Length: 147
Picture 1 (tube, helix red, strand yellow):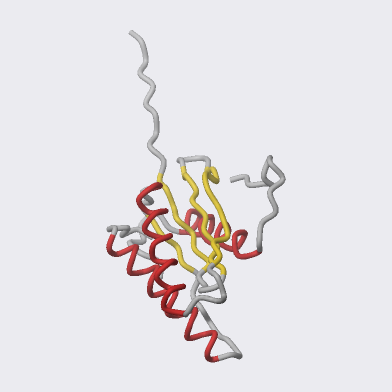
Picture 2: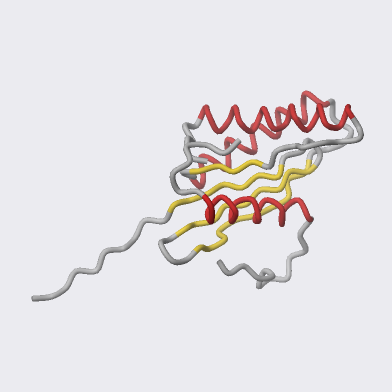
């Protein structure tokens, strides 16, 4: 009798380092004993645009990423402090837009990764997003949402 091989469906985790100027975004696939970075970028909005327009563009980007990768979990860095209250408020607003898109798209559940093979330069925001997704993968399989 032949043994059956079952392919494991990966759990996709979206990691976000929020901001309104630069947003780190990463998606990893988590398997039982492995994880793989499948997408990352540092999304930037134009500083010349009004703040509300930058938030709108961020919302559109989040909707695009969620639709394309269909993550089961989302992990978003929390803003703990900021010396500049205006910046802290704007980042908090951006974080709110990200959470709105996660809720709108029903993302309820919030490796070995080396330098990219193509040598692409990345901003620290992008690396933060990768770390956030990996942390979520490592510490929580039962959490409904990390916010």
